[in-house]
Length: 182
Ligand SMILES: [Zn+2]
Image 1 (cartoon, helix red, strand yellow):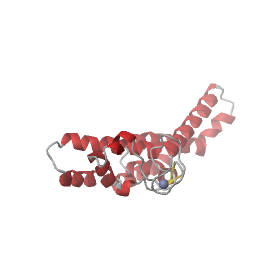
Image 2 (cartoon, rainbow, N blue to C red):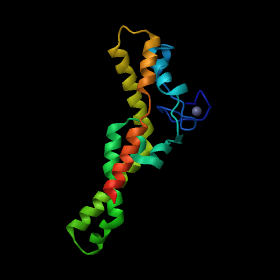
Image 3 (cartoon, rainbow, N blue to C red):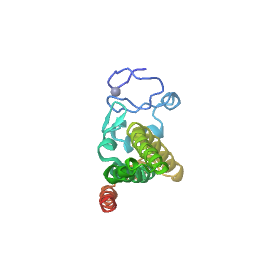
Image 4 (cartoon, rainbow, N blue to C red):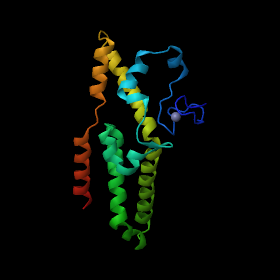
């Protein structure tokens, strides 16, 4: 499978191009040509592109973690990442003392939860774009379903409004993190 946009070779069933971020629609969407969903996703994500990606890594999530998830209005990823990062950070700062003091069971518990948090963060670094894309498709279809009598123009206005990022929530989450971390 080749990216129609930049011709890079992609694995089968890829959902977007790892190089240029271009969205790849399933055959049934493409076979029906310019379907409503296809066009509205192009409004939700300008030019049908996922921004800020490097290979299949979300650069935004890698750099800004939970605040990027909140910025993109991916709330549950934001909440999970927030607590994972907080715990990770706290253990990194001070909790490690317990591990080396020979606390047995608690040391194991700390190590295990530290690794779990690291795994969750790493998981989202690689999966964020895909989950975000799935969420965008879900949102667009919900908008179509909830406004059956609207025409394309007003649907695209709704999609554009819905696709706005939320800087305020991102900043609030950073303040809350700093407040809880120190
Ligand atoms: Zn491409």
